[in-house]
Image 1 (cartoon, one colour):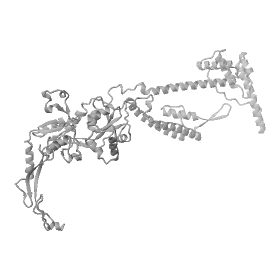
Image 2 (image 1 turned 135 degrees about the vertical axis):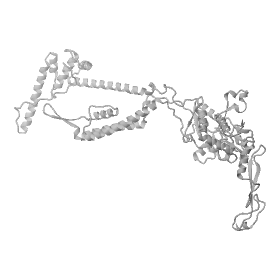
Image 3 (image 1 turned 45 degrees about the horizontal axis):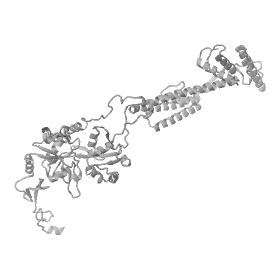
Image 4 (image 1 turned 120 degrees about the vertical axis):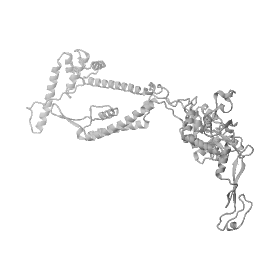
Length: 623
């Protein structure tokens, strides 16, 4: 370094290299130049003035004067050549001008779209901003070629064939190295386009969808568990037991919360219904309160979600994110070849994007497309077997156009901006930047976005009519099936109870023959159908009822009721039979009590027998 300070070097761009004793360079000058492109070469070097140490700017020109000169030269250029590409809805040819050569379809008037309106706004804000639009034949944004050249819009700017590019041109590192970009006028990102799946068919048990199958299973377990807990706490708590005195002076201890009653109580609470029994103990009330609170939350959540599940037509997408797309091979996916999206995947350092790029390169036939239109058409024609990765703006626009069969899924993979490209040193760059910032602040660019993406949409973004939002039988048929199943089950249970009771009555009446058994069944059936009506004397129902009353009053050791039953047919009054039975039963009871008293040293034979409790009667029929 010391030797370099002591050595003087000539023939350099900035003059002789010479340092003072402090190591600071001295006696040098700087040439201030401006790079401007022309039609013959990529860049044209123009010298403006010099700067020399201890002298300053030569030729009495300052930077401010140079800036004013540059802005003054803007008005000298009459027409700006603007190159663009056809990408909906940025730049499109008017429908009336597709096959017409009328004067209304000449020059700039044959184009329409977001970028066309943006150029009109720029011309209103920039003085003498006159432009002429032409299309790039290859319809490409611009990518670097193996020989170092550029194609598409960027190539036009580098060759000097265009002064400006206004299109859906994304700003990236490679393009920024060769051209200048304005401030972004819109932000976007790479997104996934798939074919819109068919609307989900509602099953007959759609009413169960607000809660997952796992939740339903847990509810069943909770129902059984709570029933068992209430049964146990009711058994251990003395406040749930009830003591009743019988007519004969005895006592019975009962508990309302049997196993069946606990199951019924818990189910009724879950169904928001009441029962005839309620817990009296503190432990039972705590368990019941916890179950009621649980039921309230579950029922409220179910009710809140039920309307959305039954009234909105849902579509289940096969993929919902880029991770879902990358981990499967059933759905092929591709991108536009040679664009910024391809550069993103090719040079990405993210592992999942690298794996997706290798997958796309290995596919035969190729999954790459030459344009967005080709990729969108592939999505529509491959019946859900192809996904296209493109910029979100184009994706969202295509989903609003007929036949309305595409959709955007997942979040954007990255975030990029669209900018207006100009060659290095363009006099329009600063003016365009100021105009774009002003349009952003006033919301003009957002209005343009709404105009071309949403206001002109051809597809319904929600439920279009009341019929699709209303319930129909196919959505709630399962509820009716459950109701019918419950009714059928209850009738089967009633039939089983009837047959069981009839069989018990037949056994008490010592009916052995099939004919008498059938007669007993018929009598029980008629009695059940008549309910509280009076059974006529001599009828089958009347005979069955008398047999039931007589058999219920017989003592347990009375094994031959034939004379008593025969007496019914001989018109013997049932009161006599009952009195005989009571006398027989009383004498037997007196003997047993006397024997017990004698064994204890007491003789209570003179005391009258205790009255007996009345037998339960399942029917309230008047005979």
